[in-house]
Length: 218
Figure 1 (cartoon, rainbow, N blue to C red):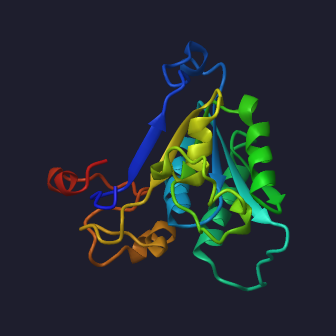
Figure 2: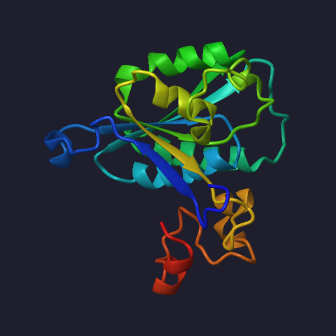
């Protein structure tokens, strides 16, 4: 995983991905949620999720977790905030097909409670793999002895190891040491794409050439 040439997704298929006829013919939505805690993996997951949200039969919800004592300074420039702002603007135009919501928590226990409350509301949940080990949003979860799949990250492990009914997609952004590295900046501002990378940003509409696909499998 540390040497992956590009971004990687772990899929835990709990039978929700086989194709519901009602979804195919447009009678119901396939419901996807993205849990956002911050960091490059969550940004990669959001960039990928925004492409899913464009499908007419998909209902996409971005759930951003915030700590009760953390506030953004007015005028502060943050790439994460910029990407989320872009999503909220597009979601507002989707006539409630796509949504954004914030959950304020004080520790990992409350974070877990919020996730459990979502069980019946979605068919697929997306989350980034790695998060800040010092994040108060995950307090009490990072050092747990019961982690069974550390390669999925602490939240991915929780979603994989419990009896949730929805499917799970865990996303890891390509490591910075790979041959086609991307930065957080490139996820938000495609025009300033990394100088050393051969891969287009995940939300780019430009096709990947056959030569590029050999270096950067998707």
